[in-house]
Length: 184
Image 1 (cartoon, rainbow, N blue to C red):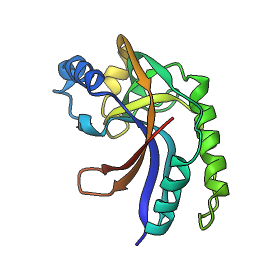
Image 2 (cartoon, rainbow, N blue to C red):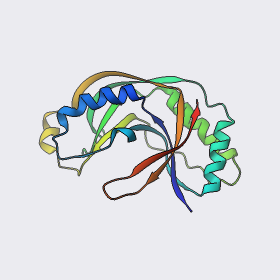
Image 3 (cartoon, rainbow, N blue to C red):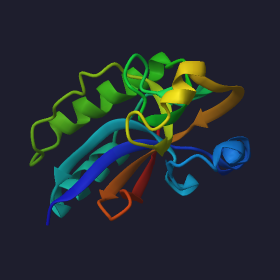
Image 4 (cartoon, rainbow, N blue to C red):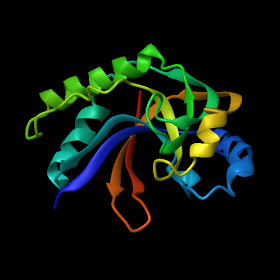
């Protein structure tokens, strides 16, 4: 059976608690808020893998060196994506160079693992962000005209592991389940 698998960095519980408190002031907006247990930074976007491929990927990642710990520094809660009609609210900050290196290293491991489908690098600009809410483009046009950054913040998220996760489509939005965590 094919599963939608992706690689992510989950936020630590203390940062999730701070963030949940910060966004409480906007919970009245007519948005589809992402549950805090699903907040993450995507490293490798979803791809279809069967059970054997998923197991092989997890084993290969566990047996590899991924590059070492680093941190995210988030500095704003904003309407997103940048330079496009808004359809999300992000926690955002500068993208640490280690994120790109981590994605490249996982891509190398993927390619070296037998039985895996071809690895297709994500060509989009890499943004360190966490999606907090989704909405239809144009739903917050009045707010967009006034501001793009909803709040400036100073949050640090240490990264000591990556998660292999499954995205399961469901009414009302995808649900994410952690399959394995691997030290970076």
